[in-house]
Image 1 (tube, one colour):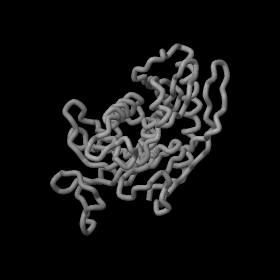
Image 2 (tube, one colour):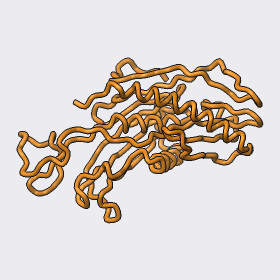
Image 3 (tube, one colour):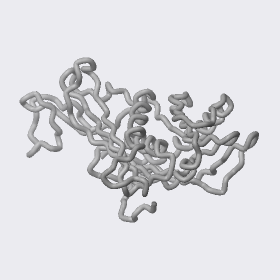
Length: 290
C-alpha cells in the first residue's frame, strides 16, 4: 500500500533491514528487505497519533484524551481503552458488514501487552485523586494487512503514546475539570490549573515484538499474509526496551516450540527491538510541545 503524498507527516524515520531465516545451523539472508517505518503525528485532531509500517502492513494509531471519574478501587489512576479496527479496505479477506475474526484477538493481545509490560504508569493519568483522571482512548486502524499485524499494531501504539501530548485542564467555579483551550474568552479560574502546560506521557519501558513462522527446523521472521496462510505454527515474542521477556504467544500449530527454537526467536526479537528503538527515537527526537 502506497502512502498518499497528501499525508503530511511531522516526523518520519525509515530504515531497510535484512530479513533472515534460520536454516538448521546457520542464518541465511533473504533477498526481500522489509521496510520499517514510523511516522508521528499524522492525525492533527488527535492528542497523539502515529503511523507504523512493517513491510506492506500499515497501522494508524490515534489517541483521544477525555476526563473521567476514577474507580473507587483505583482513585489515583487513569484508564486506557483500546480498540483495534480492520476495515474491508485492509484486506480482501475482510468482508463488509462482517467483523474480522482477528480483530478482537489482536485487540486483547495488545491490551494485555501494554498492561503487563509496565509501559504506562496509570497514576500518570491521574488529575485529582478520587475525582478526575484521564481516559486514553486508543484506536488502531489497519490500513493494509499483509502479515505480522500484531507487531505493526504494537509499534504504532508505542509511537502514538510517545507522541501524546496531555492537554491543559483546570477546575472551573463548579469544581469540574475543563479544558483550558475550550474556555470561551479565556476566563480566569479561581483555582490553579491542574496541569499548567501540555506534557508528554512518561513511558517506563516500551515493548517491541517479532512474529516468526516455525516449519520443521526452520524459522522465518516477518511473515507476509500469504506465508502465514500456508504455515501452521506462528509464534510472537514481546520484549521490553531492556530486553526482558514480556510475553511469548503461540496460538496452537503442529510444530513444537523446542527450547532451541524459542531461544532463536527471542534472539531475533532482541535484534529487532534494538532496530525499532532506533527508528522510534529518530521519529520522536524532533518533536516539541507547542
